[in-house]
Image (cartoon, rainbow, N blue to C red):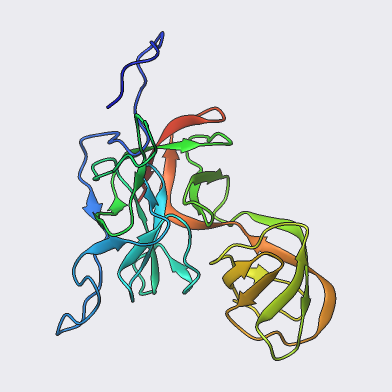
Length: 247
């Protein structure tokens, strides 16, 4: 902990990732086979890029690795149904190393560390664009940050174009924005349910082959995944709000 450098006029209601109540909570369990042959069996381990405290994280049930950025290795499931990529919340009670030179604080659980993810529990989360009581909570594919929405329809973005080749999963000449691993995408010649597996610069790889060739194909990208949480209370842009699993 560094030296105190400021004094607030009012006590903060909470901290990102901190408990918002003393109500019961539950952890996200990792599926295991009968002979426990899965990597890191019965525990989650942080993967490359780390996991940010106070954000959601994407857990790969095949590798046992957890990252705040979606790994792009499968469709995301946040409910009780089976799925390779599961969503959990990174609560504050984690081991975080301060790796920045002369740094005083840190919010990233470093790769290689064990980690516990919440599947339910009342916690505080920061909303960059603000939030309203009762709204649905989504997890950004970029970094797991919380995004509030009036309905359970995931937010989307447009403006990206790319070249598709029939029978190939590769997208080339990607312009107008950034495609991120894990993002479901749609557009002419792109199969339903396709998502981005990997992306580098002006190229990207989809989870399925394109059904048609095209140049300058307009792509609609889903930017966040629905979680089981809902907003409790209100928050202005950049402020904290309580979130809780409802029902």
